[in-house]
Amino acid sequence: MRTKVGLWMDHRKAVIVVVTDKGEETKLIISNVEKQLRRSGGSPLKGPHEAQQVPADDSREREFTGHLNIYYDAVIACIRDAEAILIFGPGEAKGELKKRLESRELSGRIIGIETVDKMTDRQIAAKVRQRFLK
Image 1 (cartoon, helix red, strand yellow):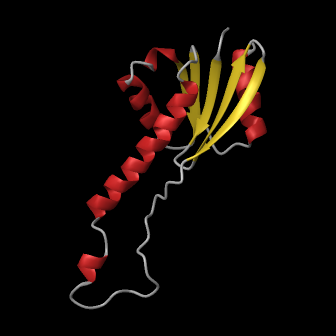
Image 2: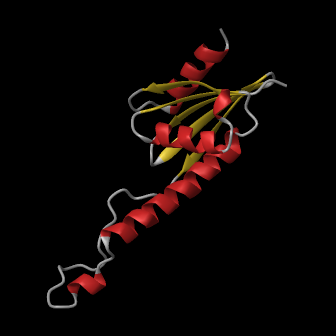
């Protein structure tokens, strides 16, 4: 059975459209990643201990990267069996996923990477159908 995947993604969510001989299926993966991590607490902290109560930028960046890695691994688990992968989306996430696919020796299956704006799930499915059912 031939499996082809179209994937629209940003850092917040991935919409995966899997096209097989039997039809198509759409999956949604939500990242639960927050780009701008916020300080906890309601009011600004004052005093000599403020720096100790707010996580350092590098530790927040590591936490952000760790969450993204979990998200990318979940996406890869869904598309691992595809023989052709089309990746598209508005930001940096598609390039970051491509690097992860390269590290797993799956980059040979990527047939294209396109920059597109936000799309509805129906628009995404239509774009994937148009690309693979020619």
